Image (cartoon, rainbow, N blue to C red; front, side):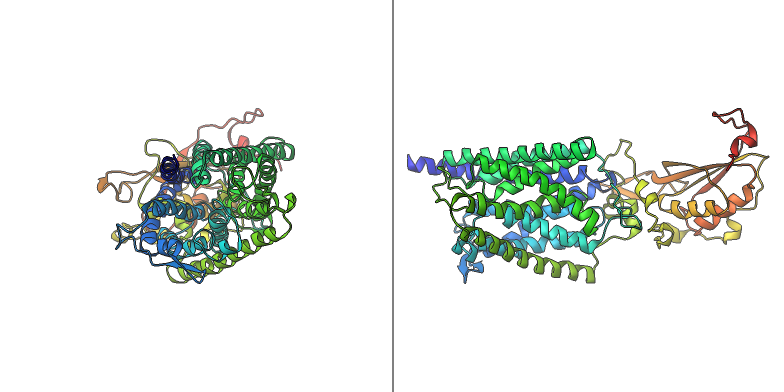
Length: 571
């Protein structure tokens, strides 16, 4: 019977690993849903490469550092899965690999929408090669933290705190997305393009978390209680967040409640085997509030842009769960542990061990990842150019026109228009591939002088999305106060920049553009055209086009005014 039970839980161990692997899909959906459509393909690629590059790094060195024979309590050594197939514990390798990939992928969301893909790949490889395996060895591989009694059953500290702290460092060094903060430092919300996908990701993660927390269980009673605490904490966290946001903002916040579900899961992970239902409730309430505070702290005080809330969810609640285990551990019947928590009469000793372990992990991760990001930044650079960020990483990093081919997805630029501290006119825009093949003309010859058709004319300007700011300022300088701005897609006779999909050439691709329309009477058409020419001219393909139409009549709906008088408003 004992052998049969051992075999059953050995199989469950691998099933749990499969559930943890499936969490990669959850992370990808959360991050994609909470960010903009123009970066969705880049996000999917990053989450895919987190696991694939992590596998390479873990096979080469990571597994030995984590699971090898302990050396002075600091690292493991001696395992070589690539050279010793028969002697490798493949259950252990696969199980620890999927956890390693989870730590790496947490960072992706906080650094989303402005990180160079190659730089992200290098970071992902380094954290899986060295950073995570060493601190995880301290906790799970028989290292010095395990020897002094530090307890982190499934990874609140070893995985989530490490990933969240790395995300904080990366996001700080990158700087915020264009349009996130105004000139006074006030944050602007940049909504994700698909909250439904984000919610699907949260449900996938919650489902996978039963394997994340429960895979290492050794008996049915322990497994069932772990499932219980893994259910209670996120549920209570979500309810707490809903009530708080409902009271504070007048309506329950959907995206914040989704983050709260993850926060409760992260918090309970360290002590899911050590606490009872009451402890799970307390952790749920605390994590539901901490995640809100974490988001506020980053936005309003630290001025750090975290598009998906990875720091608030994983770093803040990873630390919270680790410390609360030292307070709420009660030695449940299923665990067989002694009463250890401060609140259950165990004294302060265990809580201090938890504090020491968290501090050690923070120092190791903070120093190594800061050095890693700094070296990347000083060599190949961490952040894409402003032009690439505005256009979107799908196109600029992967040559992918859209992750939603066949669907109309808006290329949001509203946040750019509100960011008065960022002048798009200051961007050094790179020329397109075809620009060098085209003859350039002088600016005075580019558009001939034209006075218009009559007393009222409509001027329609179609140009690059990123040139709107300088165009708006130029038109404002000549007294144009009213305009209609529309997001459009199009290309000229050159049929857009050459693109390929799966190796096949795409015949024609529509580029993101803006269309600005103004109707003038007192201001001459010539003045408007000159102002637009001054703002937009580079002499390269893609500068745009200007169309002039005769306007027969104008009717103001709010009064009886018609013709040129309908265009005038009293001051």
